[in-house]
Length: 165
Ligand SMILES: CC(C)(COP(=O)(O)OP(=O)(O)OC[C@H]1O[C@@H](n2cnc3c(N)ncnc32)[C@H](O)[C@@H]1OP(=O)(O)O)[C@@H](O)C(=O)NCCC(=O)NCCS
Image 1 (cartoon, rainbow, N blue to C red):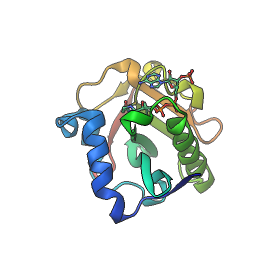
Image 2 (image 1 turned 45 degrees about the vertical axis):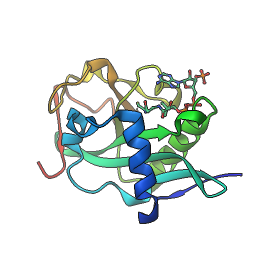
Image 3 (image 1 turned 180 degrees about the horizontal axis):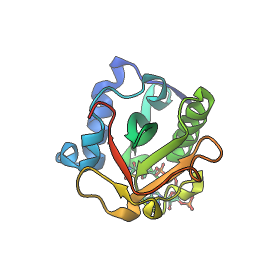
């Protein structure tokens, strides 16, 4: 039986090990970490467990998109030997549903695999001319609307920065 719940401090070490395996030792030097300056949104820090074993982890941070505050999805990782069994999709769907229900954010932004996120409703962000803090492959940037009309209201180009930058 798989269950998705909020992370606790007791999960931190296992999550750090999982993220190290998934993204490598240099992960904190990637430009996306310049946007994760404060703590993540604790209500959206989730783990997927089976029989007390953590199989997947997902976190979200708030970031500034010009004057708006939006959500940044990630990091997301599934235990290496359990990938391709739907756990990634389950935890992402749950995280996005919780984010939408909280009603605080118009949009979610992700820097992720261009082929993985469209199944959740993400669309390419290239046409919004995002000014990202550092190097990123533009095709990785994708948006999801949590509030109808949020994408249509955007006026490119748009600066993406940490909330306290
Ligand atoms: C990416 C990741 C989270 C996906 O989780 P998962 O549990 O393996 O994926 P799921 O079983 O939910 O989904 C499988 C589907 O996603 C696709 N998929 C899996 N990894 C993918 C990737 N890196 N890029 C594109 N598609 C991917 C599969 O082809 C499959 O497609 P289908 O449903 O059409 O058959 C997982 O592979 C992982 O932890 N990877 C290492 C860390 C990482 O890359 N994190 C995300 C970066 S954006």
